[in-house]
Image (cartoon, rainbow, N blue to C red; front, side, top):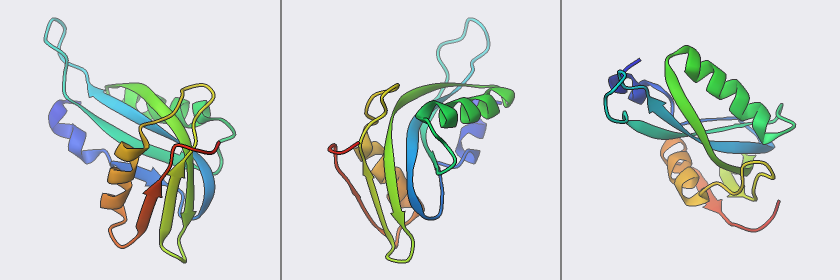
Length: 125
């Protein structure tokens, strides 16, 4: 995959309701050998099925590597998604990956859910 394909990767994929772990991942287009570093983008992924932040990262990075991308985990936290109230709150941190930059995650979530109230805080686990 090339850098031109990066926009086709959704910025945000989170469960539709509940409280769950999430990770902020940087996806890199892999340049031809010897070329300078390729373009990248950050994506937000959060799912209730994940017992650990690494479960999400391992699944997503495996999928991205099959498509020819490299990934790095920038951190994690939790998301409280209240779909009936149209509210999403991003908070906390990952024991394994550290705290994601919630402000970046929140901006991406706001773009995906423009009619929601989206907030974040560094406190909480």
